Image 1 (cartoon, rainbow, N blue to C red):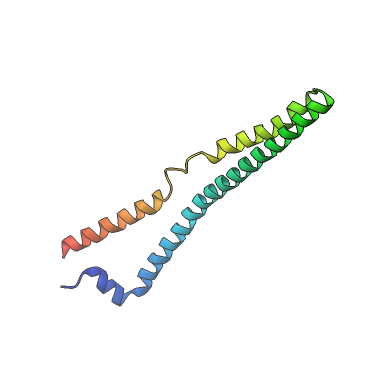
Image 2 (cartoon, rainbow, N blue to C red):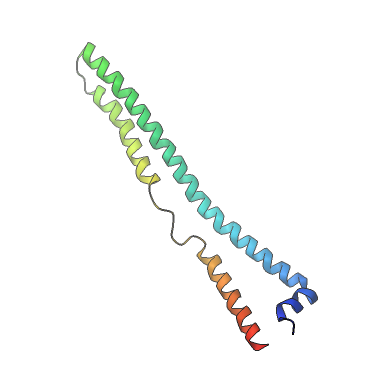
Length: 123
């Protein structure tokens, strides 16, 4: 005997296509939210690295100016701002991705698999 899913595929292909289109929309929606999180972290890593490089350059310049011109607080504060920006970006960049990524898609796949098992058990 033929599984009921095959008879639906043959007699009503538009239903299957609507179902597949729904899956595609769900995947796109959930991937875009996770994609934004990944993009945010990539940008944060870039800012952290760039901030650290700027800190090192400014700290080197501050040491040279301090040795030739004498100490001034701006020689400490200017590189400290770049270091603070780098530290904040590093904290943002090292956060974990949300654990609930694709949970709605998993739930839908589980529901469809359960429905197919139920239909298969009846035949």
